[in-house]
Length: 307
Image 1 (cartoon, rainbow, N blue to C red):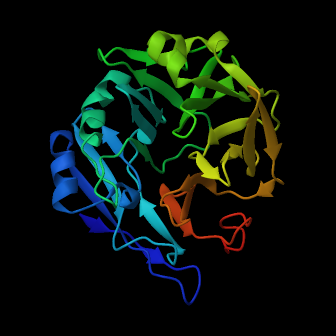
Image 2 (image 1 turned 90 degrees about the vertical axis):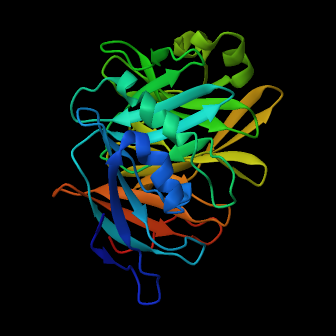
Image 3 (image 1 turned 90 degrees about the horizontal axis):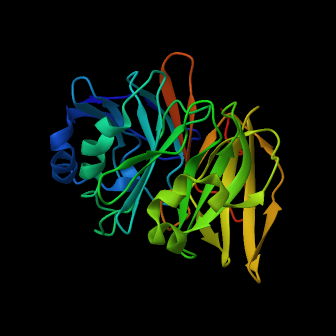
């Protein structure tokens, strides 16, 4: 393991230290348990399928609402796991890689993730990580029988950035056009998927919440329930990020947008119940800057940070 360079954002902020764990994939869960790492402290998962080694940057110390700062992580040039969920035997996983990769080779990584714990000792059902995803990612689904479905086929419309809403039992995602450009926010109920899991790849089975979003969308942040409403951030091209709130009335979902924020930070979303948010910026020298902030109510995370 090696410790990354760190620096803080403000004089009174906590120092954020990051170490890199490199281990064979079969030992991932056992090493995470031995180091007593909870999922909120695991910043990313990078996988070299040719060697079977997993590279895991993780944050040292405890994360809470008082944590605020920035740290640089020197990251390997391997595909990165951007998001993963494991809901009722159906796993979704989102990968960003500069080169082609075999999604089936990621199954051993996903099997290890099933043993991760959160800060309260519960087995986790979702993970979000940092990576070089400043453009559209590849989205896959693993069914209970281990079949892997590709939701982002080449030269076709597709779906990416799947996010799960635990309160309302539904997925949200981004609809891609044939240019691999995110155009609409769509949704599908979990009950529909459970009845026929393969329907998840059929874009006609999804309902459109917002169409023709401009600029085009790259990814969604983690879903959070705020004042009883579904809320998440939308990362868009051109260093644009917007918050969106969804309210369902009589089976109709109404979307309300916040003001656009100009920022290079890609929002991952909340990492804990006490309001701590995480985001990241890929840098030109193959490093990733990770940001942690706990904003005041109705304030955009990281808006006051000096990048």
